[in-house]
Length: 403
Ligand SMILES: *[C@@H]1O[C@H](CO)[C@@H](O)[C@H](O)[C@H]1NC(C)=O
Ligand SMILES: *[C@@H]1O[C@H](CO)[C@@H](O)[C@H](O)[C@H]1NC(C)=O
Ligand SMILES: *[C@@H]1O[C@H](CO)[C@@H](O)[C@H](O)[C@H]1NC(C)=O
Ligand SMILES: *[C@@H]1O[C@H](CO)[C@@H](O)[C@H](O)[C@H]1NC(C)=O
Image (cartoon, rainbow, N blue to C red):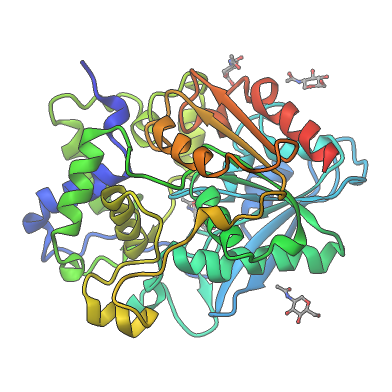
């Protein structure tokens, strides 16, 4: 039996440690380019499909310079006449997520063709968001962040920027990690005043029930180790080191890597195999090792807290208490409009974990909480599925029209 879907991002970490000794003294990590250039998501993925596209940059309060793309009109050139929508990608991805499929299949294009003003965010550390006011990606300090900082800085900057540019409140769409940072921000009542609604695809919050046994083993091994001994501050999945690790993983019994995208995202029902090449041209993208550790902590603990520095003193220093601060999902306002869509085949956003979250939302106003379950969908089907327009996006747009 092939455990294809068990090879998740955490397995990469697991294997980092399994063969770490061999790599310790080798500097195998490829450097990606370190500044925003003329080439970008607009010219590579959006204009090539016949759409107008604007490149923007927004600087976070902690100095990261993020690129954003705007699709201000549909394919027919008709300017948007509906509210702005901000699209926030997930872990190890970038804004290309929303425009990699054909125009009739990609959420970014479908929204533009339906009159929405589309804005695409790109998290710090990804290929087109690597600039900083004072740091370079080759500085370890550049990578001193986990998703806590995406909640505190990247998300509010992106939302505020769109609000500033359009003068309107916006709809939000997050996938995977793009849902966790949103839930966490909402739980602290951040950014809500600028949002009309939020759509959470393949929602990630609690990770304690993640079904892959390999992922769990990876998280446990990861936490037991001193992480920085490898000097690995940037977790660069396109770097040679991780490619080598993938090759090791793929030779392990039970791991079938004949389809690399599947090995990253799980057993997706509906992703066209012709997507693989396009996917590998643009994804996966870097994140910080600290972010990966933070997620591994959540898999092990089953809780949603800030990054755990691992001892009472360091936590005290950062948080003023011996344990990391909790993001309380019960604090998300009950009347804030949310549309959650999750899949029965998704091993990263496990249905049991989603149910834990939904249980917390059970007192939410039923008019403002829509929950969709799709049995055959896994993690990537929500963004790349050939039928995602019919299954998810048409419902999402109908939801937007009500809020
Ligand atoms: C995309 O959708 C439009 C409008 O529904 C249709 O006219 C067109 O033929 C579709 N294109 C493809 C390649 O399927
Ligand atoms: C939004 O506009 C305010 C007021 O002009 C400005 O202070 C702030 O820096 C802007 N924020 C972003 C993210 O563009
Ligand atoms: C899959 O992609 C190929 C090549 O782009 C295309 O010809 C085919 O129609 C696609 N299949 C589906 C089900 O969309
Ligand atoms: C990163 O950007 C550079 C320069 O624009 C480009 O050549 C390269 O293909 C990009 N890599 C990825 C993974 O997007």
